[in-house]
Amino acid sequence: MALSDTQNFINNKELVDKLISFVNFDGISTVIEIGPGRGIIADSLIGKIRDFIAVEYDKKLFLELEKRYKNQNIKLVNEDFLKFILPDSPFIVVANIPFNITADIIKKLINSKMKSAYLIMQKEAGVKYLGAPSAQSPLLSHFIKIKFEIRKLLDIDRKNYTPNPISRTSIFRVT
Image (cartoon, rainbow, N blue to C red):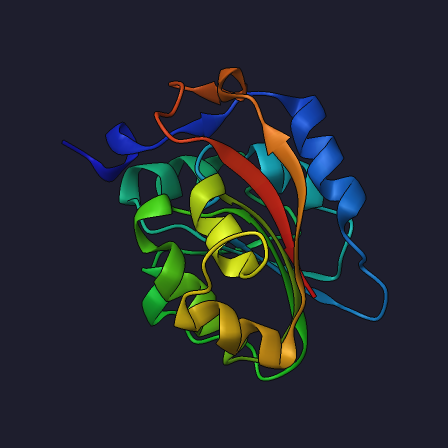
């Protein structure tokens, strides 16, 4: 079974437009998307910034993205995001992140030059990172709050994915 066979892909362009409407691109020339999958978020990001990097681990999806975005303003990287070397200058992340490595992604991002992140993630995980009074505060939520503020922006209906996920999801902003 390929990695792409275990993923839930966003299928609603209006949801992506809403996600992009939250993003503050001011003063930033680099945006990273973690796991662009079939490219629905990438479609909305191309042309909005100077340097757009999409890191896709799944080889099959990566090859499809390469064909789709040939000669477009996007740098595609076929690599595990957790091994990817982040830029040494401020950047923004916009992504529907893999639920199974959410904590590892958050740890990597908060220890980088990230200016902000607009993440679709499993709702329960995101609420934990909000910490008290929204939820019991795991240690990671305290580390996030040293440098960043995290807010839930929008709950997402399961019908916005193919296939529909078991987990509930939300958009969170880390700034």
